[in-house]
Image 1 (cartoon, one colour):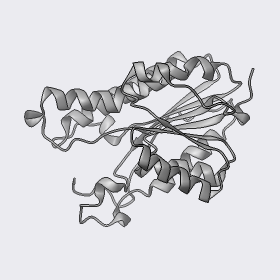
Image 2 (cartoon, helix red, strand yellow):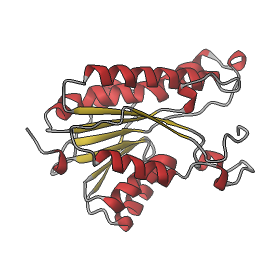
Image 3 (tube, helix red, strand yellow):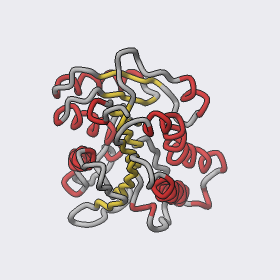
Image 4 (cartoon, one colour):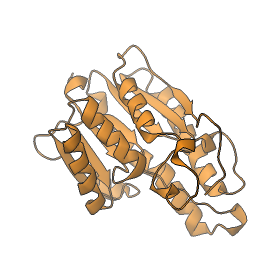
Length: 240
């Protein structure tokens, strides 16, 4: 079997926010090659530059719409880069709108972005992950995966689905060397909060999230963090 320690890290939604923080933290704390996947090439280039400044020597950009299984089927890892042994499914979208006002198109977009990006990525790379002596899939879920929200019901429904998918995937892969971790993330500082008057100090530091993921990736094949919840220390703040 191929060696997990020599594999790369694939991060979706790496063009900004939490995904960018995850990429920079892997760059600063590990020597793994990084694969940054998102739709916005310009923002991916910024993340790539920041990762190199943080210490990474190999950072490649994968411009792709992960909601499309067809696009992912055509996706090829650049020559000279090992296949990913760590996949962080971070790509997501937040719709702040009551269910009664949410259109069918908006609801489907929430499901496509928050569920099917992860499903499509896993389907694309699962065969390669199973060829390694160890592998890790991290799905960034939400505390909205655990409870309903009266101001963003479609988002909560899509994140419920992602957690259910993560739990089922974990059960299916128990007899393999592929670990699955679901992180139920509370309110975390990202560019989407820039228009809010809420202080970043009241929100989860995305670098803390990233550091936890790096730590999980360093566990031996004998141990798995199945699910964890991260919340702001001082509790939930008003929605955006």
